[in-house]
Length: 238
Image 1: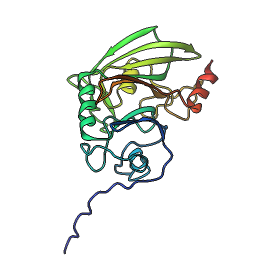
Image 2 (image 1 turned 135 degrees about the horizontal axis):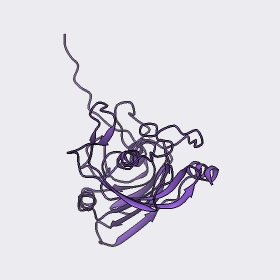
Image 3 (image 1 turned 60 degrees about the horizontal axis):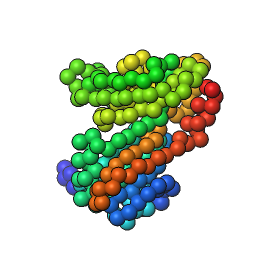
Image 4 (image 1 turned 90 degrees about the vertical axis):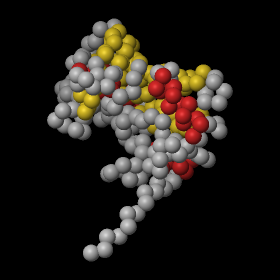
C-alpha cells in the first residue's frame, strides 16, 4: 500500500482579538487572556496566540520553528498576563540570553489556599512526575527551580501573593505552591477543592515584566492589571 507523503505543518494567521501593549521593530508585548493556548499542538491546532500574532504583527522570528514563531517563553493555557514576543532572530537570541542569565525579571499575582508566612523562598528541583507524565513534580535530581513570594493580603482562607519567578520551569509556581501545602486556587491539576473558595479559573496572572531592549539595551518595564474574573474571586474572599 502506498503511503501518502506527510503534509508539512503550517500555521495560519487568524483574526483573533489580541491585546498588544507595546511593539516596535524588535519586540511585541501582549496581554494573553486566560484560556488561550500559546502555540499549536495536538488538540489545539488553531485559535492559539501564535495564530493571532501572525495576523496582527508584521513579522516574527523563525528560531522557534514553524509552529512557534516569535515565542521566547510560554504561559500555561489557564494563566493570563504578559508575554514578550521576538519579531526577528536577533531579538529572539537576545531575549533567550536574558532568560538564561536570569536578568529578565518576572512577577506574578497568585491566590494560594491557606494563610502563608509574610514572605518566603522555595528552592526545590522539578521534573516530570514519576508516574503521571502530564504533570510536573518536585523531584530529587530534577532541574533547579527557585521561587520567591511575598504576601500582599491575607483573605478568608487564602493568601494573595506577589510571586517572583527566579527560574522558568514548566508549571513551576503551581508545583512549588502545592509542594509547600498551599496550592493555587482554581488549579485543576495541582490544586485541591476547598468548600469556601470557588474559582472558575486558575488564579495566576503574569503581572510585571522587566527586560532589556534587544537593540538599545534600555531597561523596559511592562505591567498588566488582573482581569475582571480574577478580581471577582479576590473580592468574594475579602
